[in-house]
Length: 348
Image (tube, rainbow, N blue to C red; front, side):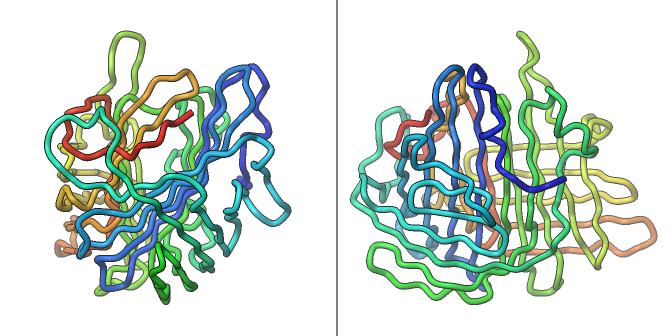
């Protein structure tokens, strides 16, 4: 399956959203980035593009974040790249860009409702990154035909699930050397976000070279009803990829999520992975995510979270893996009383 942007193939009357994103963390954790290049298209309208940039620093009071949205004239798919949005571009082996022409957020965390825009200050960021990694993508869906089918309404793949980044960052006048930072490249697209979702990711395990974990779970609205959690993902361990979840695992999987963490159990063939991902609330960034139809979710993300995994396989001792301040946890939800400040940027 060729890795490419899909927004140029969408009919004028149709709705669409799409995202190419990267996550990378310093090898010893505590400092990381999450950059998204997105397309949003309402039915019958021209698409818009956005760049979302977040620097996570566990030593800081809160993440630094910004978002810039541009019209279709600043949205393209250059030869040799997947997508370009305004001053940012990502493609095989490289991501570079700059933001900083509009308002941006350094958000002060606090309890209570988050419907009101969070306080913000100006932020400028520039990045020039190269990445290498596994050339075999992680396809979360179990069959290629599902990527062409109407359902699920969200398709997702990790073109590079175990990337290693080199390069430089400049954030609000702070220069950061990116040398050997582990992370990943992701891509999703579709016509509608899930009703509720979680994303769990970890790479760069110090005691297990070549190991990576990338999984998620979604609840899907079916008319007036909402499905149970539908899990999907993969663990690469000791040179073997283990597919996790799937429709057959709905009853045996377990997801217990909250705005500060998630406890999970994800079964696969001859394997069970369970664990927990968590982070202090101050280290989450919050955004509005909109569907092409205009429906909205609040989405919170921490890309410097703590992750603990226990891997159970028949005939083998349990394997325990851990990342401190270098995993990702994302929760998409309808509620507004989660206590995580929302960045002051509309979506769509």
